[in-house]
Length: 278
Image (cartoon, rainbow, N blue to C red; front, top):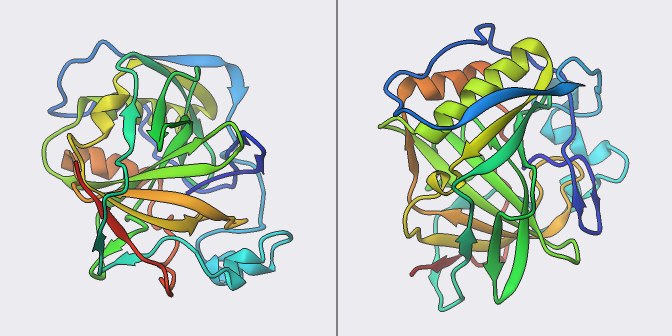
């Protein structure tokens, strides 16, 4: 999960440099027609070419060294770190999250240098946990997935990062597998390529965010952390059991932009993973 800093109820996304896909105009094959549109978001440049050597996913700034970063000691000494390998779950009657995402959301698309970040322009996309409202701050993806299931990764994983009024975090993790094309992802990936190629932010209009959540999902819930520095803990994780499908060429665009931006799984320790169903 990608975050630049957390200050009470504000969540933003960090930036480093990696390589982008060269084709900024590729059309997703097999995707259904969409009323969504992509437009340049003024002249704001993204952070793709910024130089921030403090951390990466490989080498001397890779995950094993994250704990050496200032204020990121939790990355190496934390006891409730994410992601985890989900192998044993416990059934629970914990209330399932209620997801309220718009079908006509506007999103700013930014290639951060670690992943592609999609930030809603309004506060209308929320989840409800135990009668408390958590606002969607941003979402982004990792290839392959960060969470594992019995030691196996999915090809990709989307993280939807939410915060309540006190700044407490809840993240919904959605696994992606190859299958049928997803028209919402087609719009977002087109904007992602444009952002990477032109080094400016783009805005996607009228995006159906509800299409990025599996229908009536079962969740795996556990207490964890951010999956990027500073690896802050006390993050509530809700990982969907059912994966979302995307076409092979859609997955190829994601991996062309970013591949290997997944933190290795962390020890589960004494934590319990709860299975929450409808």
